[in-house]
Amino acid sequence: MLITENLFQHLFMTLASRIQDEFDIPKDEIYLDSATIGKMPKITLKAICDFYNSEGGGVNRGTHKYAIKTSKVLETERENIAQIFKISPKQLSFLPSRETAVLNSLFSISSNKESNLIMSVLEDHSIIGPAIKFKELTGSNINYLSMNDEQSLLDALQERISKDSSIFLFSALTLGMGIKRNWESISKFCKDNNIRTIMDMSYLVGHESMDFSRVMPDVVLSSSTSGALGPQSIAFQFVSEEINDEMKPLLVGGGSIISLSKSNYKLSNWNNKFETGTINIAAVVGLSKSLQLLNDIGLELIKNHEKKLRRQLVEGLENIQNIELVNLDGIENGPILSFRSESVDSHDIAIILEDIQNVFVRSGALCSHLFMEEIGQNSLVQLSTHIYNTEEQIKTFIDTIKNIMEEI
Image (tube, rainbow, N blue to C red; front, side, top):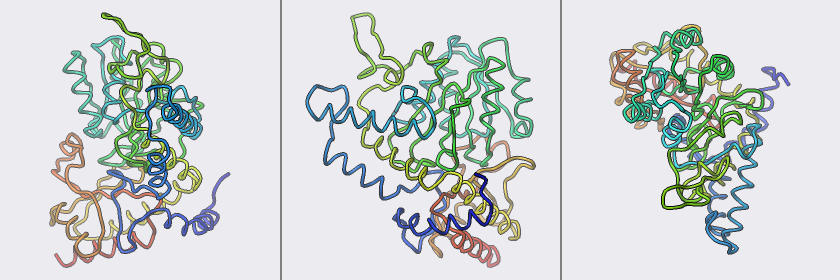
């Protein structure tokens, strides 16, 4: 159903009180740093506590009732999350962090370890760091896309395809600049050109609907903490059915192994072969509850709400002296926006905003040093919204930053 502006406003106002009640954010605070750590809803915190109070066991660790109950909990939540993204539960795995998932995927997905790895300087450390480590260990080549390549991304990719095995490692929404990629078009293009794809959706998931039933990258991974509004210490990934059989994980052990000799081991099939060690089941339960809440609120509603907040932010900041937005013409953006000031240090802006109005933003290099080098800056101020932010909060932020700049 196409949501008109009036219908959107009616739906959002109907849900507004429920949304605010779900997030335990003090009324006098404005939290604009969801891209770093999203605020968890109360339903998630309760689900985590309930798990430890009633189950608290580990999977694949015995035949007693706690092990059996916990295994059932894991598979139930796996099914719930898979349904949201329109994938099979067997495609979904849980790992300790997205950095672990990125490095593991690079080794798992590449049959030729001297691969041509393509990625953008706009990616953050959690993507670029594991890629550099992969290069160090395998001798692979990293081919970097520039910021200007974003305006014709598929053409830039076409130019960098080599005869060797190519992998495109990318974010659905970049951290430093908030550029939103058309991941479906990228996936189709890469498949047609025999390029393997690994996509991080950490900053886009939970902000809009992502349906992988029609097309998906070879591997999709995400942190639980930013857009998904889940707990820390867990990440999740999907693997396409076409590539699963050829993937041989770098990380093995624990429940991923079903038999072992002195010189060999046999891995489980599908999702279990990626799940080494003791899985943080409580975090999986919490992640599932957060994703279900966002899905119940309505991901289309969330998307429209955040578009409205972004327009409000852009219009407000553009009219403030000594503020410069970091933007690219003709590029679609998501709920992340960065700016700089010639007259005030980014960290100072963040500190003043908190001191005088309890506005919480991120400042610094934003875990994106190559991006900073690309734009010739040392630090920026970053705003990242989510469903719990309101138009009134954005107005307060705009008025506050305007007053700060006028005083200075």
